[in-house]
Length: 398
Image (tube, rainbow, N blue to C red; front, side):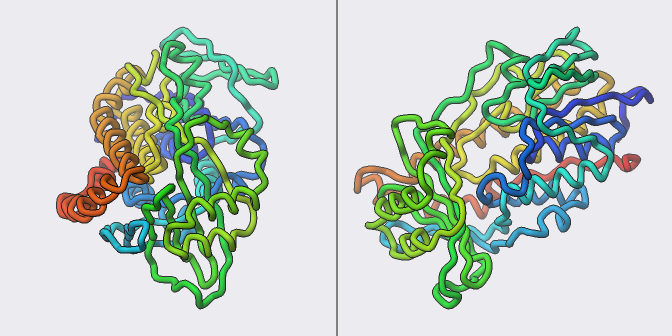
């Protein structure tokens, strides 16, 4: 793969150090860029968020970069995903290999990899201003009054992206999906549930529940249910953990008893969040600045593919910047290569969400009949969610 770049080292500012940002910073440093990684928060990253189930496409990126063993060291592999209905009857099984890992552990490992490679991490830097000539020079302002400069600005700052708002003021904001998610960790008797190497999904009557026994007596779980009224992060955070878990246990009373058992054994903090989507943007860039990951195209979480899609974006955008002489040309090529896949994933996520908690018995019956067929067809063809394979990494890159 031959680069069109000049030999001059370009300065890139990556805004957001969650998952997409640190991986992008790592890739860019290895391709010869000077990279500053800016994060709005100052708290210890390992304490942030619940767990996520990283899809195979995310692992594929890490493997291509030689990071999989290091970054996923704290994770637990699931050899398959099972789907059951509210009566506990197994509807289907997907033999995809996924990795259950705490979001904070994943983010922390990626930050460490990026800084070890040579990226400079700056915490407590909340973006408030972005001024540039639209081509190759940007002045970046932060809430603490400090400023920075860069040739390229890359917004990886999530669904409520400040970069998106400053860069593309007429871009649509995040849409509340009328779904609230939460997740936590439970401790039960070591012999109550086996460590079976499976991620279990249950389509409940009033909510969707997933769990994995990650070690004897330890269970990681998540739950999604519909709430018409939007409650923001701050309002949800005010609810006592015990009160929240008790309400979830009552919500899932008609479902398999294992759900209530796991919920009532919850220990430690319980993460809670409203779920948002970002409608398709007309463009993801302006001049030599762009947004990617959830900042550009947050899809509903019902496929568990958001983190992996962000990793795909980071990898492919870094390669595009390496291949093309100018950032705008790289961004156009990147958008063209990614737009159809993102649209297909967003559609698939919405369709999956529609069958998670149907309110009418007839809809549940149709779902239970069709889901095994749909999953078997997806496995035979290679599901769109997991079919991505990273482009070759440049042989001359370090």
